Length: 174
Length: 174
DNA sequence: TGATTTTATTTCACCAGTGAAATATGCACC
DNA sequence: GGTGCATATTTCACTGGTGAAATAAAATCA
Image (cartoon, rainbow over all chains, first blue to last red; front, top):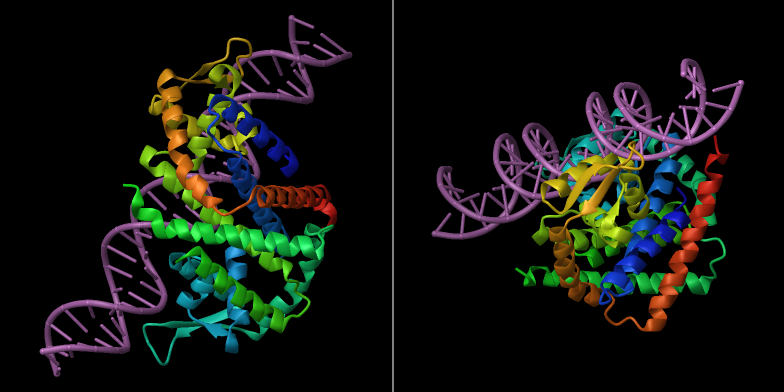
């Protein structure tokens, strides 16, 4: 089912709810649309990654290590930069090690830590893979002016700030 | 970790990647920010639903049935309106039936079908629950002018259209 | 009418993410 | 210099979503 059709269904559904309970604001539609887009965006990303037999988590982790100074990092750091849960890192790293894209070993300075280092093969892999993903990415924002891009960026960050405020206040409704 | 901090980390990470591979456009940041926001938005929703012991899937299904004319619908229809996978519907419906919010039985007209009908208790439940979610929703768009809301809406739908185009063209890179 | 195709739902096996607890090392303080 | 607290990673049990196949009831049509 096409995303545009899903949105149409969603619009109808919300219209129905608002008829039944008028206090419900139109903003719920804005939320749902973002959730639907994100879902589809994620699918698009996974689609582009499929030929490389990577999922998004592995991709993010690999890129984080790639982009980190020295091409090496620790599970904790990688999780910070990728917003992945620490608990998943072990499995993800296992997968990357198995494919020879990174190595993993104990740190010399702090032996609680583990260092994950990108291999030369991993570096080549990233340098080949990333550019191949760009054409479809370009299509995504087809028809967007620079102005629209920056407006979208601004509004999304504004929304993100509000969301962060909510996080602060999370404990206020027991 | 606060959403705003996650975004900060993400920004840094992408800056690093773009230093290494300059062809990578800034648009990837826009994508990632949307994914992060959606993740957090989903969490916010689940947070609001927790007191009612519902997850978002169950919530969406229940609302879809509630909003449907006659307060009754079929698994397939509910899936259309909620963008849930058909395969999940059985489990979700089981949960809702067990809680007495809906009933489920074979259809009289077409016995391949199953009808899911909201119970009086389910109706009361929705009417009590929905309004209680509004205050936090309001905070979400705090500081947004109507103009900004509609701009965001427009840009998101534009993006959704592009994504739908991509869906059409999905099979073009074997 | 009986064979074939289509539609609707369910079942099952599998994959990915999560929180709580286990493990192991380092750090600080008395 | 040992005891206790903090940090880093891993393990495990559980939850939720997915695709492929099973089941069952129409609908189509020769």
